[in-house]
Length: 432
Image (cartoon, rainbow, N blue to C red):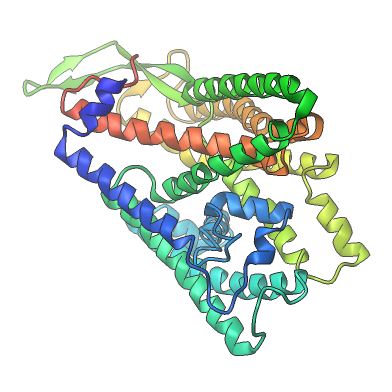
């Protein structure tokens, strides 16, 4: 493994991409320390609000400092969710673009960018006004209209800049840019979480020091075991046998008959996107209602969208499962897959090409996605149970979500790097 890591830096192209990605991530981290004008963020830094913890997770602590990146890339995630939902024959034009290949994808991506800017501006105004109300006017030094507009413009520009950073990483760096930025934000919060655990369990523990150390060791073993389990499930495949009735190959156009291969379907085809979408969807009503005057209605809605209680936890799990099914079928389209197999003269043994193959792939994907969605939901809610019964910091509630995102992004990035190494005849990480 270490030899393979050293191989990354022996290849100039890969080395340049890694360095470029790291430099842009440094820019991202520096931006989280630049506070927005007219803002005093001390009240935010002292707050233990659950919503702030969720938003901080994706922004690498930018919200607690009310920095120029305080909105993070959440407006982009929200815009992506809405855009993908609109493609499901809700807006005919979007459905048409989704079927136009690369040209359609560019149009949808452009719309998502513009929609992100609109959402970011609206969210910036609501957030700056809401936080100032929540903390009784201690956030903003001036509450004039011009102040709110300036803050909204700065925050929107910060989100647009993050979006640009993500696109640059995707195009010229390593991995998916947006995912890498979320990854960097989560990883940057690990030292703070370790510090909180030290303060709670070690500092001033007295006679309970031995028990607390034993508890932390058990917790470390659980984290390692869960990480291994996540990697195992994320890499799990269902190999569907494929038979080629006829196949032309080589310059001589020789006919090959009866050749077998397999079609790999991942147990969790959706990756970590459903968890990110579910968190974004879950945060939206909390963010809006927490800025309003508390009433019996708003309190009930906030209770429903609080995953520390059974009702909110059930909704959270349902959202993860629903988004897993939705995104799995976006990533793996059984209709297109069956059509491509038919065109290539391939078939699944015992299954007729065409409609029957599509039905078989759909049913198989349904079963795989069911297991994958339960896996995602169980890992996401596991830390919530630990916080309730293990006296852990409140911030640990999002540990499962963080772990899924970090492991998922790391695996995808490693695969991308390995694929580039394989092209240059290096021995990669993944051994079949």
